[in-house]
Amino acid sequence: MRARPIVAAACLAAAAAAGARDALPRAEATPAASRRTPVVTAVERVRAAVVNVSAEELVRIRVRGAAEDDSLLGQFFGRPRFRKGYQVTSLGSGVIVSPDGYVLTNDHVVERGARFRVGLLDGRELVAKVVGTDPSSDLAVLAIDAGRELPWAQMGRSDDLLIGETVIAIGNPFGLAHTVTTGVVSAVHRSLRSEERTLFDFIQTDASINPGNSGGPLLDIEGRLIGINTAILGDRSAGIGFAIPIDRARRIAEDLIAHGEVRQGYLGLSVEDRPAREGAPAGSSGGVQVTAVDPGSPAERAGVRRGDAVEAVNGAAPADAEEFRFRVRDLAIGATARLELRRGGARLEARIQAVELSPTRAEQLVQRRVGLSLQEEPATGGAVLVVRAVARGSAADRAGVERGDLVREVNGAEVSTLGQFRRAAAAARRSGQLVLLVQRGYAAERMAFDLE
Image 1 (cartoon, rainbow, N blue to C red):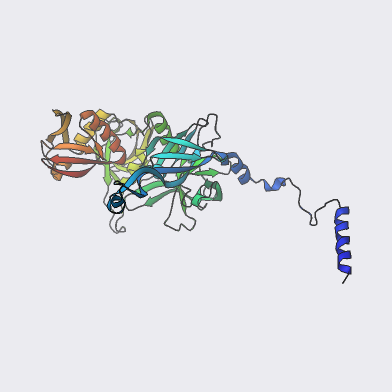
Image 2 (image 1 turned 120 degrees about the vertical axis):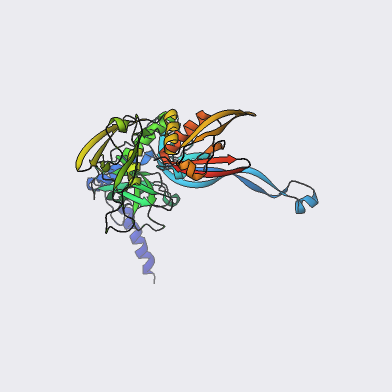
């Protein structure tokens, strides 16, 4: 029984004699070079450029135990008192793309917010302002001022991606900041169909993308930015995520930074689906056909004619008219669209240089595609827009618009002058649809028209 203390003392003496050596040996403190894989190197290079984005919405908050009437009766029976306050409505990710603090993220991360904060890897939290948004591409640009140069991610390219190449996603899934996942490029040029529209030309990846990853970067193995993570397939994606290609994101971000909006290139032609071939699956398209060419437009100067079948746009065959419109909608001003056409039995190529859709051109476009002419008239306290003429048989005529009706809104924006209408119509051209609030007497109705 007395041997135990002696054994314990002997053990303590042996440990002391060992000079505080560990009982179990450990590896060297410096990681082996073999552990520093290309993925580790890429993450170390870019991780500090990834940010957490929180959007706060201005709401009315009930003051507990307070009423407008502070008397005893008022506390029990009076109306509740409210104050204005902010609550977080969305959490997402973003990536700094310039040393002076421009941040690229998703539009759906910031769409409901009134003010925004950006969290950096070093723990700082900075106020961010919105430079511009583009809902049609789900992209937004924020700006932050840290007082000094910030770490930033170098943009790569997305037109040469290899199926199966390694990619890295970094973001803020479920509020877990700067989470890193890896995977491969599963596919490119993927299309997603939602309840309202079809989204085209996404990068598909099996790198885990979860709620909160939205707006974060998708990187190649060298740490270059190749996409902006934006969506998963369903509530449980089972390893199916999607990113906006960086080539498109760069073009949109540059316009938002320089102009506060995306300037759309104008070609001057309209298309529709061709009838499907006999025996084709239900709902399929037989291709794309030109239905109209605007006089004096770049398309007319390039030799495009009504009735031409469109075989390809810049080397990609559009499955239907909607995909064709998407592919030409993102053309930068001055860029060239190369159309491969079939006219009868002949094949030909047309190179069309996109020009800016000026407000005046936008008004002319409405006249041609919708059949509506407007004039500005003085009114009490300002002006109103009055329908001057409706072309017989036009879309406006079929919708029931009449001479003398008032146009109050364009795509949700109030208009009362021709200048406002022209600018709103130019912006509506990007979405492809013109939604007018038309008033007759005391009644008002919203009417939607295609601009494509």
